[in-house]
Image (cartoon, rainbow, N blue to C red; front, side):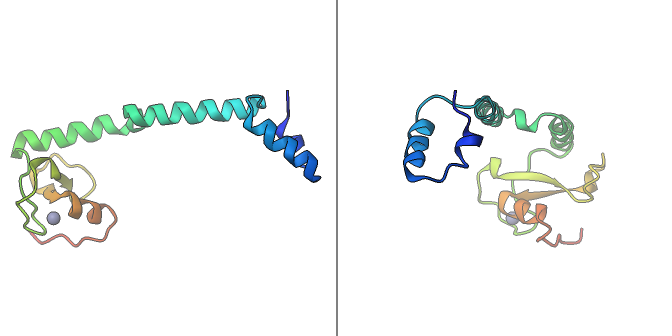
Length: 126
Ligand SMILES: [Zn+2]
C-alpha cells in the first residue's frame, strides 16, 4: 500500500506523475481511508440533522413552549413584515437565557433573526 506521507516528500517530476496516478487510484493510506470515513460520517450526520444533536433538544423544546403559549409567529416585530410565509417567522429569545417568560421572546422573520444572531440587530423596546 502507498503511504502518501512518504510520497509527498518526493520532488522529481516522474515521481510526481506516479503520485498523481496513485492518488487518483484506489490505494490509500489507512489515515486517508479514516479521513474519508470521518468525512462521510460527518456529511451523513449533517444530512440527517444529527449535527444538531445535544443542545438542539432543549432549544427546540423551548421554542415549542413559546409557540404553545403565544402561537406561531406570523409577522416580524422588527421590520413589521407580515407578508412572508408562516415558516419564515420564528421566535427569537431576547435575553439568550431562554426564560419561560413570554416577554423574553420576540417574533422575527428569518432575515431579522439572522441579523439578531449576529448581534447586528437592535431590538425595538417593548
Ligand atoms: Zn424582520
